[in-house]
Image 1 (cartoon, rainbow, N blue to C red):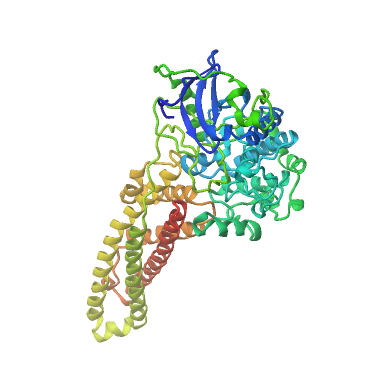
Image 2 (image 1 turned 30 degrees about the vertical axis):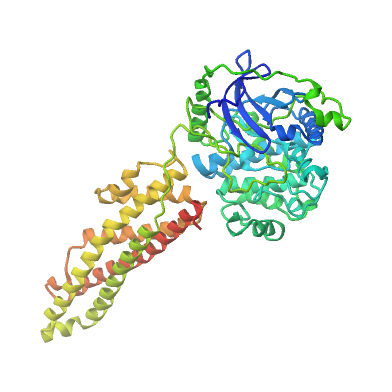
Length: 585
């Protein structure tokens, strides 16, 4: 939350402003308190929009419709003044982060049960919105707030009101204007067709896919906005990582043709079990995230009133302040409470500036891309920054490959020696082979030594990146990511648990889990062979004893080659997944 500036009013109507939450295409959003001490969010419409008579008319109509949407799945409507020179609306302040922040910055993808509960809440929110005669048109993660009691949908009706000025002074666009956020638009919006409730159902599918995987089902704008919109209209979504009921639900919602998507009534039946669980008071989010939301709500009490005296903004202004409206023959717009449109912000005592895209839709045809960062909320613990690890991954892979090649050469050498062992013993060439083996032993030792230095460094970096992806959601500290490999007994178990957590928060299962499991068991066998096999084949008291020792050594070499090969695959795969998570691919 930013402090109030010299150009900010101290009061709006009966509300004392505490700070600025953000600014967007619609106007500025402030945190405020009523005379009775209730915390609210007040949104002031931009002056240039207020001068547009068609915008005022459409805005008043949309506000009137939004008033009919109840407050169970939205922020409650408290107050508004659409007749002021600068119209404003006030909604209840919801102390919760956006779904975007939860998934991308604070926790990571939601588990399937939570995603289904999210679907149940969003379906009921859309039921209320559609029942009031509205279509959201811009359902996306930054317009969904996550609270302890369930999700809350905001900013419905805004896109249609802004549509009235999207073509400039020439008038209003009923169809043809693209309203929505790339990445979370429906095919109808992409084609510029008239949208209906089925458009929101398609957007719901995209939101649920993002919530459960951390990825947009049609990709990002890195290849260009037009390519992204083409994929939405023509190509099938990438639903990797979804399964069971959630996969079926999302796949049905993302049907290209509107008449092939489920209706809200059908979705209500599909999500009935989750709705019943919510009604019974069962938690819908993981315990760690619920605790984080609780702390965030408590922080709201830390917001203090500014001490600087400012000029209050009058609740109403004379109709003369609206020359454009009067000139067009329209009288003052009557008072109507506004529907929920303001994103929440849990204000810390002091916090970083909020980005300019705080939960408001653009105007005059401007379209916010998915890459535009949604609002930044006060976080209890600021996540550390994820760092590239491609250089470390390349070095680690080279060393692992070198180890594997040396052990493979030694394995072939052992296989040849095994078949000639008796002849070597009788001919006296035994010791020549021993000298060759000593060379392999030295090469293997030094390559292995370099690998066990570099690999834990790469592993530690991957663990730190995972912490940045999902702060506080991983077991054991980052120090154990490097140290657990060198602690007796601990090295049998802890590294695997840390690796499981890294994979879990980096990408949806089973992205790298199968490779991880195969590599781990190969590594455990390799470690056991080298720890418990101290018998050298050249020290055998007989040919039979030497053959037995060689057989064990060949098995150890095979396990090492397999472990090294799978290790290279794992390092490259996990590095690539983290790069995708960081937007580097």
